[in-house]
Image 1 (tube, one colour):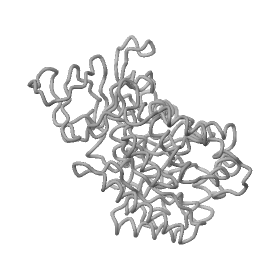
Image 2 (cartoon, one colour):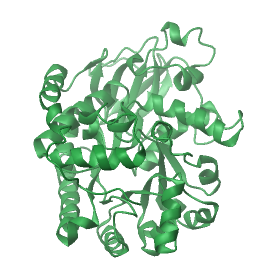
Image 3 (cartoon, rainbow, N blue to C red):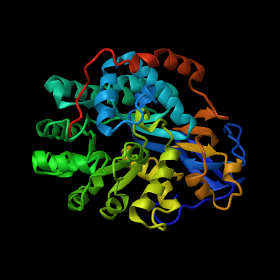
Image 4 (cartoon, one colour):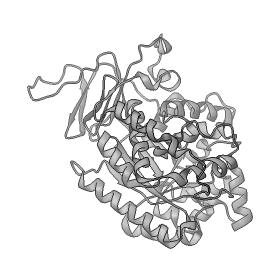
Length: 440
């Protein structure tokens, strides 16, 4: 898929992978036979760059379906943040394993995560073979000790990824994870930016999630959330902003100044489900030079970690937002889930395309099902028709992690059993209390 213009579908190609990197893409049959080459038959399938889930909270799969038909305030204050009082390292690991399995089976080869016990998520990602960038979450309500512990967790995740790296590029990376501009003080944001710049981290946080949050920030701080990120040097350090539905026209010149270091992740199903009123202003962000990726947020609200579903809803909601059926083309939509996602993962030049020199993160998809036929345009099928179950084989870093629609790196039955055994402990509200109070 080229960076600009129409995404291209080339027929009958061989993809040559060496040491986890795409070495060549050539017409089928052009490669000289060799006894030391492992061949993967993809006849009848379409190869696409592995999808990137640009913003999620993977262990929240354990709360799937447990917070339905509530307002955004009640979703946080009566459901999710009280449930998160039950988090333990073991429960996070079990949830992360299930999330990694779900994403890999759906052709997601990279996820960008923001959650607690990030070391356990890293362990699950290393086991299952998926690629991940992990940001340990913290609130200012946990004090200086909580903030510093989150920084240390990021350092440990980065060290773990580096120790397991092959061919110079870690499969597990880390970012700093202040929760949001309304739950983290400006003092803590300034300190986070200092650490990020000094130690080479990016910052992954929620900002301007809704128009109401932006107005509340103006009332409380005299600045929009984006202006807060600017004056605390978070944008200068480099940021992945989750959602951004409340980004204003006045914010765009600020973001444009930091376009080389800023990405926004859009999770449209969440905005519809929580009746948030608007969606990420992709057209305006692109005009300002900002890369946008597509994500699922956590399955406690999105219900799945299916990026195919997210990119489909993104295309539809963007057309509705702009009242323009010609906007958000199928090529633009596919680019969001691939090149845009690569930028969100902090690897714009390494992921997101099937090109020589990029990491071999590839999904092979079967478009032969009745819901995809007749096949007038494979790109349209990928955006508007394909299902997660159409993914046949997945390769991450040159390793086969899903083969013939089955997880190749871990025991799925064991993962499902462990999740079922522990799920009730996560959604129990009898403990009382909450990890935070939602009052933006």
